[in-house]
Length: 75
Image (cartoon, rainbow, N blue to C red):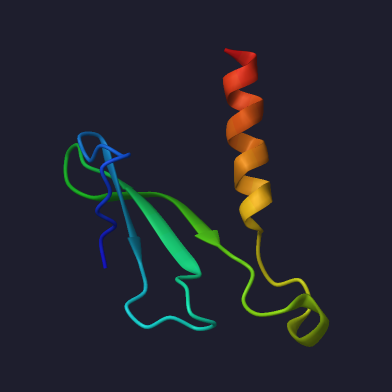
């Protein structure tokens, strides 16, 4: 399912996630380039379920926020 959100543009890239959610939220994301046909640029797997029950199995929201903050501070 393609993400549709007013905060992002789909001019250069677009994001998709699975149709059926585990733990009430999408956990697997794919980012594609729009130019010259769809080309997979990156995949992001988020944590699925509580760590105490499932172990660490993906990145956390805070990880992605830290990445963006680091990039913005560098600019």
